[in-house]
Image 1 (cartoon, rainbow, N blue to C red):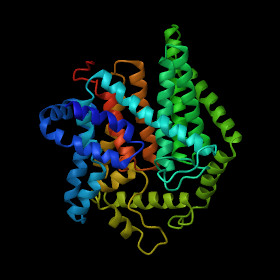
Image 2 (cartoon, rainbow, N blue to C red):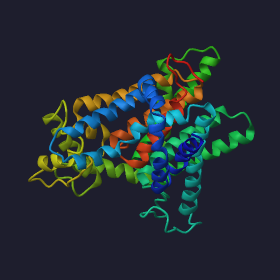
Image 3 (cartoon, helix red, strand yellow):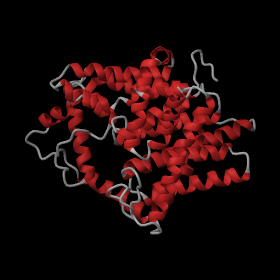
Length: 406
């Protein structure tokens, strides 16, 4: 059990850095399912967030058995979502509050190493190394993962740093967390090119400002109403506009999306990245309309997309880069409903956690993946999917049946 717990903690460090190490750690953990089946089953049926994760994985499992996809291929696609099935096991391993904090710190340590290396490469202090991401450049210094995944993870890490800054008791801790958060925000918005990271970062910064001001006012006996919320949104919008005008790189990336969107016509978007994604969304919506209730089955998306786009100029894809559409196409509105139910359950249960830090971090995780799922398929992606399962356990494992906490 101690070895399994250690491997679970190490996953927090490996998820942002190494697929190979992830696989080794998961392989060590897998036999633990057999030896702890009763405890895992109890968590999966009684813990609301774990139950929601298992329901989604269960529906995707059932969806393997209809449609035209050979079972072997369907199993391969289902394996992309297997991290959801690990949530109860991770929760069992992180049942102690100290271990949950260590798990979060392991992730933050990995992102701290990533942040340092990204700045060193971006400032031309450290030459690009052969073990770094294959497409890394000094203008796009994503170190261990693609620039999209790097931006997504760094945005959440910067948000956690802000929460730690708010909770820090000493001046040294506040300085360390504040500097880490600032460097992380700059890295996401001005150094790395992932536009999903921009969206996640801005969403989490707004959420942090909202909850911090609301709590501060309530502690002083002042009421928080829609006017205060509107003022926060307006101020934040002004800051976002200022950041846009202050960064030529940010302007270029945002303006490129806008121009490509205006030029897009259905099934004629192959020449631009935005046009390709819009083609993916458009054609996947047509598939969902044709198979609304059950979808085409797990693993059936690629063939369905090929049929839908036959005779058009659209580029073929096995992934529409939108988790909502991807799951809806494979498992219908039932699967989509369970995905939304997972996010809803996590958001609702966050308020039952024991500390403001846990509550805000858990809802930040939900917001990050709500945004991420609109532009990518994070639960299907190895790194993002594993991080979601791991952080869900690290934040919600203390939620007990009957709303009791450790």
